[in-house]
Length: 391
Ligand code: ADP
Image (cartoon, rainbow, N blue to C red; front, side, top):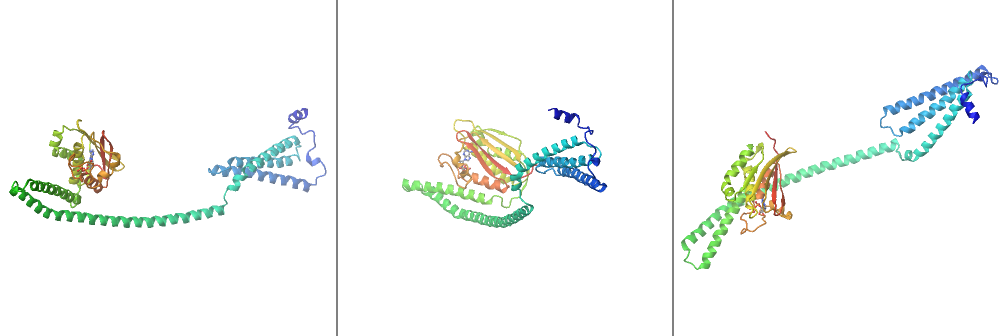
């Protein structure tokens, strides 16, 4: 212990040894070769950590920072041993020299320990050739995906064009068929009505009943054909223009005045937008269908209450018509938008089952869609969107 205490007390004391020049027989050449070599090694060992630190400070994403610092410290310590070796030629600071060597030894082993610990990670690192190969592979895969996407885009475009063409054909067919069917139907129903008028009571009661059935059925058929014709006419030839939805909804409510008064309907509307580019007749028909359905499918014994509102979302206007009616079972939420799909028979609620198909076509005509949220016995909210900027 005493030796250790003496060592640190006399750390700068040089009196115990002669300067190295006077220790043994040094020729000038031998001594200066030793000194200059030590100084060269020391200066190089001093420069390397500076380079390492500069590298770390520039390279923010460098990994293994702690090892870099450890390495810098270790090289700096190694360099210092050479520096003190040179110094001892004039000042025999052998104690400091020993201390620096001890520190160097400890740092060296800590570095060795860290390197061993890092070895598995270092092995897992890929060489630049491997990385380049991977980049190349990825580029090729990306290229493949890009090609596929083009091909796919082209196929989708083709399919869309084909679907549009088929849709147009179908619409044309529905239009022509319903248009051409009107004339023979009118003739049939005209003559059946004439038959009833002129021969009622002259045939037997069963014949009278049959004639009544034919009159009713041809009436229904006339409505169906008219609905179908209207459906195939949606968007045909009409011009789009700016529309104030507040005014449009008030017009619909005025048209439905009797129905609203008879059913004592409570109606609230939020602030509706002015749309730039819509088909007014179609939009009116959409609101009319939704509002009249909300009243038609009211809950018995409950005052019908409607709330019509709109909000802007993701470049669309989203409208909602909310009621407190009979609601719709979850399994039918999509089915009801299909043409001629009804959930009730005519004796319970009249209708032809085309109203919501109309609404769907109109929403799609405006680049939007339609859907419903409902709870049986509580009510339904119909939503539809219109892709149109507000003025
Ligand atoms: P229709 O009213 O002629 O039956 P729609 O296409 O307008 O035809 O509606 C289809 C079906 O959707 C209706 O038969 C009804 O069952 C259901 N439905 C539509 N609107 C509502 C509503 N507001 N509340 C409850 N059910 C509704």
